[in-house]
Length: 515
Image (cartoon, rainbow, N blue to C red; front, side, top):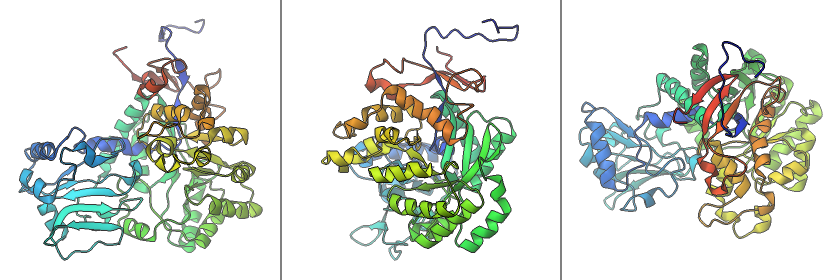
């Protein structure tokens, strides 16, 4: 109070809980606001409800204009989509034709990482005609199915079994795409939404493509950034020679701890071992457009991956790599590169770590790698496979083991949902969705430990642990005032937490006027 002056705003928190701002290390923040640009079907409980929503959209359109909606089902995960409809099935082209005989209609499939494959999308007859899809059309790959009726006519329903969907990049590339102005508008809205749940910083280790970086830059140019954003670049290299040319031109902008200011920084590169050759080819053919992804999809065989990682190390580019199914291979490559150019201290990142042996964890610690986990996905949404094997469950996103081995880690929401508090709950509860079973009870974190991962842990990813992540003199005033007592409230209520007041650098960026 001794510092209060004439221009000081004093806020009486009246006993509310104050925490450091949340730093989400796998946020895909640009994606969240895009969901609101398209009409949602989340309230539809029958095909008739979907038809009524489409009719209302058609009323605002001219004949021939597209109607494009969000997927069937309920966000954020769109789990068990057809179970939300009375008919227990997806609408067909003929169902949609009844609502829009003179307009092309397309119901987007899910961005598959929100749930699990397949991604199911639906087009009406006019949309199919514009796309050139008819009874003679075959899928572009065995992973994509065009559902057909008994008389071989396409029903309008597409099933895409790829990790990253391809239908809108192949068969239905005629569907309107996100435009730059929409991405900018969505990013502003995303920041507002993230601030409202206490998020003040992100680290986008999965990488951003140029079209997303351009949107960030425009918001930054206008001084409207309200979430500190550290972005990793997502190149679409097809060969070592191409990578070498590119790196010579721009590596300096993302080398070391990155380039930028407190609100927007470029730092490092995203490289993935393996990947689907078909998906990479299909999606890369439509660049610079990336759809929901926001990043480029690649296919790097083992030797090319090794060469690209070595190139990145040579130019002091921090490497981020998704290792859900390829941890052993990536560790082998990192250790080989480390013998040529030490990477400890450069804070290279392993994204989506799921299972790891004790020996693998020790290798991770020796290399000084950071671990990012998407625990709500691994523990709540997808983990029925671990229910019958308690020993395996104990190795899945094993945070207590990480602490014991001295491994630095942080939490990502993967924007499913974007609120950190569902992820926070998952870290302390480790509960599976369908059965309520606890997976790996010995790996449950205390609430303080989980908060530390979301604050100090996130700051470490950004080389900002001396400036962010805790509330103490000399650090930036990034903070959130919560709607309930984080430490004492009922565990089952944790996902409903929100921020009543959020500050970034001492500036109020969100305030719940109802409180």
